[in-house]
Image (cartoon, rainbow, N blue to C red):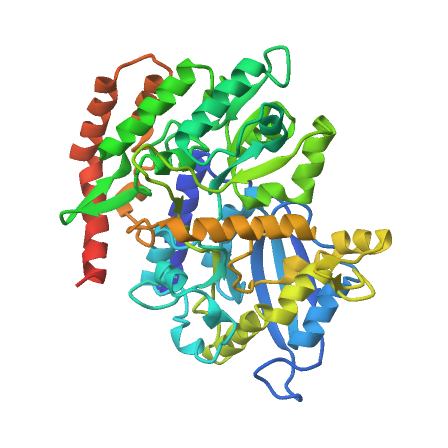
Length: 522
């Protein structure tokens, strides 16, 4: 059987499994395709070099950029000396389209694996589906600014098979709590810095009821289905790290230990149980499907605390909250110190998605593709993603603030210059996304504060074949944890499920993780 058929068979099995699990969208959903080209210079090539034709596929959230007369596309093509075709695929259909693209030879030069280095990606690498990009990165000055920790997280057998789109190592996801500063001021409360202070603040919010009519939600969060991690709710990371709970895993005495197996986790759950009984947590939490729904409650003005990050301070969120309550003000609780002095924020993988070059792409073309990714990660394109074409999408940045007419704003939204930045510039302040100077400064200050207390997951860059084929392995634990928090069962019921996991599928997962960890720590 040829390599192409092997990949097709593997991807077909993954696609079928995803469909059965209800995890992917319809493969019949349309894609929006953009093409750009030009004949000016490309970095690392001569002035006379012809444009390099690159066909890429990437994910899009929301509306794709305009197809006709897109000045952003045209400008990037001219400056990068590329004939670029990008298929923007809606998020809900992406996994299906990616599966088809991998199995179809010569369909794309660049594919974005939005899930990064997961078990599927590793298997495809082992099958020879992608070029080893390691030798092509020498001299790629912009790409080489990506932190070493990020490169370690994406390597397979110490080689680079996908170029990461960098994000901040700190500050993503549920890094911190956002809290209503106006409510704190109303009741003469400080911004909480300890778990005890937060608990007291939540009690005040419940008792004083600033929303009125008993509608105030002190702390809003969402439920979890147990498919990704063992926890009763999403949106509680700052609290668990205040108790000294590890970031998913830790290695103790040469053995892997999952967070739920620690005494710290039980203490964390005891706090959750007590907070639930005192009506400090949103009663809808078990039925909220995701953090987006929880955030909507916060921005609707009914909740006091929500687990987000520095991006919560952006203009859009501030505007939405002020529509609900003109007196509203948001501030970030950077870190919470627990009863034993613990505090921290998780260290993310530091990237979102990997750009892989299929092995069907001619070797002589690979360097040009890497050069273009290096070009899009340049400082000039970091600026371009914000300003677009000067005179068309904006009048540039003035004192760090984008200067735009209303007409330019409309054109920017149509052309979406930032969507053509296939590779982002490495920026530790990527989550400081406000265009307002005072908010931007506050976001950077928050990111600086949490960067000193990163909690590392020793297995973050590893994958478990057993876990991949047992996606619901934590589900029974989750159910027991949720029932414990709600006061429906005692801890013995939770411990029974943890022990069952540890002695069953968990033992195999831990063995696979430790084998990879030991290989890297010889």
